[in-house]
Length: 259
Ligand code: PGA
Image 1 (cartoon, protein in one colour):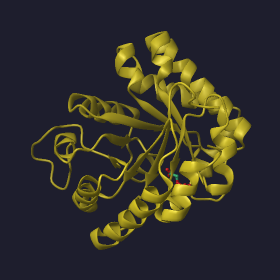
Image 2 (cartoon, protein in one colour):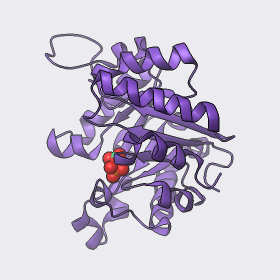
Image 3 (spheres, helix red, strand yellow):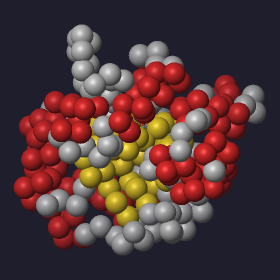
């Protein structure tokens, strides 16, 4: 099974959903389900609310000792300064955020984020003692042209070249084919396995064998029905879940899938 020695991380990316009242309701539902069902051995779950709901979720998680790691969806590359409307990694670290997503395809597409900007954000995440979840993935046309592996490996290299094995090993990389996000069309477990193995190979090529212990997630239309088979793949160490993470029952079912 994927993550047998590396551990499995199931992350809920809430995207631009859940104002702080709704976030409180969702986190209480998750807390109740996790209290009764627990978190399977060797697995970990993180939730990534929008910035305005992080403090609410932090308070609920810490007060009730909910077994969830706190995450964010993005950050700025600078720690502070004249960047109106931005939120820094330093600010997130102060809220006990553990994982920060960087380079989600929606940000690359709608906000024009480049590999260089994603790399600078990852620098900021490490500098502030947190772990990045770096999203990579090809567009449909790239897959059809047979360019998926080259595209994804170049995205990985752009962010991780020149880093120590220790730093790379602390990272999470999420393989999220753009055509599978929010479309209901998940990659097959075999395709996910192939691409996650390529990503691991690129991490090792950049930083040496120890870097291969980084966790590699799959993301894109994951639901309770597809999660078990995906997590059974050797190189799939977790899942990055969008839509289904807004439903507490589905998210917890995904966390337990195949365990
Ligand atoms: P989805 O989103 O599960 O709704 O497809 C995944 C993601 O964008 O991380």
